Structures are given as structure tokens and as C-alpha cells.
Image (cartoon, rainbow, N blue to C red; front, side):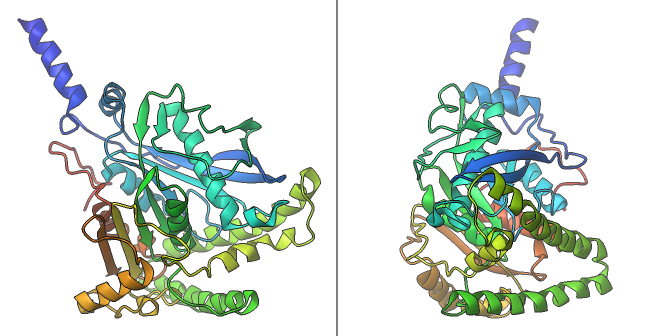
Length: 396
């Protein structure tokens, strides 16, 4: 009799995510460094995996052959390092259905074939990094199909279309999230991999302003706005956000400078190009891409949420035909926004949310809880299971 009760309790624990779930936040991000070869070029890449699943959840995933909810693929902004915004990202993991957030970063591709430089190359590399990072956990990406025959080698091992998937017992779709330039890149990745990406969250994103007509004036115009926003962010020092300002500044400067300094070695180990030391400028130019249905079709997505910062000068909501504050967004504003930038998405199929949140361009660092909750709710990935033990690091 007792044996039968014990077996029943174990079965319930392994198959019900609402019971005995207690996730723990990592003390600090475990940054991994990778060497990536793509398009006759060797690149440095970095990654962090936030896997806060309990042993019970992992066993349940294995039994069911799938992850609860979707794995979250997070793309940071311009040259930021993967450990940036630790509080925000760790809370995403703690409060998501899957409990897994993958954060890959790679230097700017600038290889032999020019069509795969910049964001076009990043789209391929970041997806292959995500697959490689999930493989040790036995997770494969359901519906994945490669978009180029050009091979990607990570630590000298080629990531093949079915090579690492054949023996992985757990399947998952992806919800992709992106911040700043990463928000624009996230949409382009979602467009490129419709079979596996089913949700999109854009956080103070690029892609909603027309910067000009030529490569030079687009980049110069963006930079001028960006410098003003840097001053805007610096004002946070006066309101108790000194640590956040320092973190954002260090992440951007170290990433950009590091990308430039590492570029000469890629000339020696692969394709030579005299402009490689200036490849971060290619990143800046790609940040001026106008994201609409003609360049990044995402009608297949089931969830889309776009979050603007109310005081974000560089990507202000008024640039996207929205008012300055959330209470002033009318149904007409929303209709105009979706028709302009997401034409082709069906509101009967796709749950769509556009909102204006507090803060400037580093809103998710200054207000991690509201940005985290909005991102997870808007993509249908917020954990709502009863019995979940929330500690001080989780929802406030």
C-alpha cells in the first residue's frame, strides 16, 4: 500500500510542473567562449545559458519529450556582452515556462562572401550557437531548417542540419527576444526560421525609424541620436542608477573595442579585407534597417510584443507613429502601427501587443521586473503554475 502511494506521488511530481517547483537564480553568469568559423573567417563568440529548471522539471521534460513552453533565445544590443543585464535575464529564466534562456553573442561577420556579412551572417551563426548550446541538455529545435549550405564550425566542429538532432530526446520551439539592435535582429531571425520560432519580443528596439537614404547618412544620423541617448542614460546617475549606467557603458565599449581589436587576427586566419578593423561600423549600419513586412515577414508568429521606452531618445515611440506615453495609445495608434510594420499578421492568429514602458534605452536594466513580465506575458511564456516557490529574486 505504501509502495503504491510513493509511486503515485513520484509520478505526480514528475508530470505536474505546478508541484514542488523551486528554481534558483545563478550567482553569476557562466560565460563561455567559442571559436566560430564561417564564410572563410574565424570569429570569437561568447554565450551564457540560464537553465534554472529543477531536477523534477528536467525529468518531466525527458519523460514528455518536450520542454514546458518554449526555450527563450535572447539577442543583446549593439556589441553588448552576454552577461549584460544579468538581473533582467535571470528573471526571464526564473519566470518563464521553460526555465531556459540562451544568450549567444558573436563578433561582426566580415568574411569572403559579402552577402553574409553583418546581420545576415549573425542570423546563421547565432542560430547554430543556440542549437549547440542546447544539445548538452538533450534539447533539439523542432522545425529547424538551415538557410544556407555554407558550413558553420564551432570549436572546429561543424554543426550539421541533423547531426546533433538525431539523438536528442527533448524537442522545443523558440521564443526569440531582442533588445535594441538585438530587437531588430531578433525579428530578422524569426523571419528566417519560421519553422522553429513562434514568438517575438522586441525591447526598446531598432527598426522603427527611417534614418536616411545612403549608407553614410544613415549611419551618421543614427550615431548622432545615439550620442544624445548616451547623455540621456547618464542622467540616471542622478536618480540612483549609477551601477546600471556603468554596466551598460562598459558592455558597449568593451564589446565594440574588442570586436575591432580582434579583427586583424581574422585576416591572418582567413579572409583578408582592409576594412575589417572597422567592421563594427557595419553593425551600426545594419541597425538602421527598417523592419517592416517587406524585409522581415513574420506572419507565422503566434505572439508578438513590442516594448518602447517612454524616454528613449534614439528609438522613441513617436518615431513609430505612437504617442509619448502608454495611456495615450489608442486603438487607431495600434492599428496604424501593426499595418505599417507588421502588415500580413492576422490578429485572429497572432496575439499582438505594443506598449510604452518606463525608462530610456536601458529600460530592461533599470526596470527589470516590468520589462520581464511584459515580455513573458506578451509571448505567452509567463509561468503561472500553482505551487511555484517565488523567492526574492523573482516577481516583485
